[in-house]
Image (cartoon, rainbow, N blue to C red; front, top):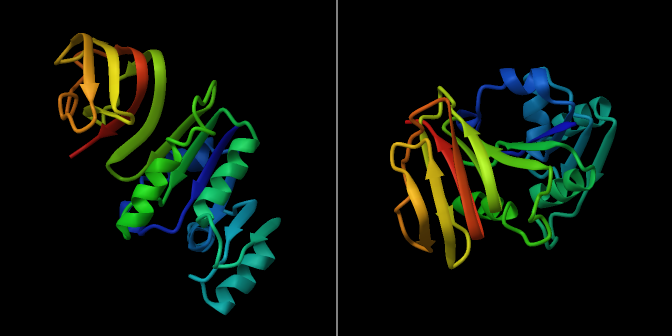
Length: 216
């Protein structure tokens, strides 16, 4: 199962929704993201949030259209997206795609990125989790070996350490290969690499890496 979650970020940062309309098995809306999906002709099955960013009329329409609304107080210890994300994890899907989670307020953006790094989430096991916008696909990986394939619209491949140091990094099939390298927090060594064939391999022995596929 593939779950797509639409948060309330600005539409100008969204990816093209064509692929998601075709592949998503279950749509979830978060706060204003519910209304955004309905405006695009997508009917989410579940909604989460305090819905303080929609009008009274919009909320009435949301009540009519959704199978289930999970309404929360605006005063709580988690963001609306974190609540929806935890619920999605509990469904044990094959993939989770989070849209509308970038742009706008920087505190929300950084908080959303850190959702992928939570100890309760890592390791993902057989579950792949992505934050996606118009220019980027972001995911987090624990130590292991991973095959990566070229994406024609995402030329750049970057790795950032999530913890203090990631060790044993080996990259093959890339413009800038590595062999048993280490990456410390704050290093830009693995920014803007590129695949030189249809596929490559990333492996590392210890630590957690954020993987970012980007376009200009």
